[in-house]
Image 1 (cartoon, helix red, strand yellow):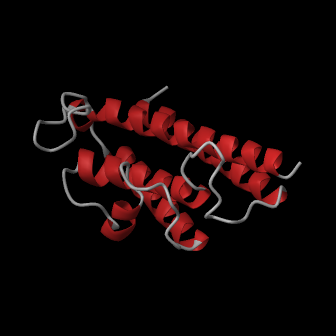
Image 2 (cartoon, rainbow, N blue to C red):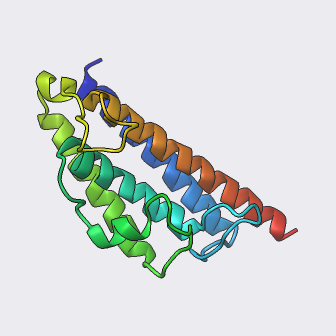
Length: 164
């Protein structure tokens, strides 16, 4: 399997799980993006928007070493913020996610082997990413997205328990 096929498969798997959790949340009646689990975890809206910012950060800031595609949303939903939903509509969050995913996959499709083997340099990224290949950054993005889809599962389960 080629890298492009593997990364498309990862994106598809990530999207399916995320969409399933969003659907299950809605079916249980949890449509309030400000809902925050009793554990203190970030709010539903923050998690959804943060997932979109992962695509933005990975492509535009790490791979391209430029500014985020959507600086306003990126700043509101990055690590270190409160975890609160700040009123961004579900449609705007979904559009941010969809466009980020599309741009990310389009870049991957056009990437050469040397693009994928290029290493992230000091001064262009947080220390965790310095020295990683772009291929590793892509894998890390999907891991990060799935990690937060796990948070969607936890939010749903907390919501269900709070309604018993």
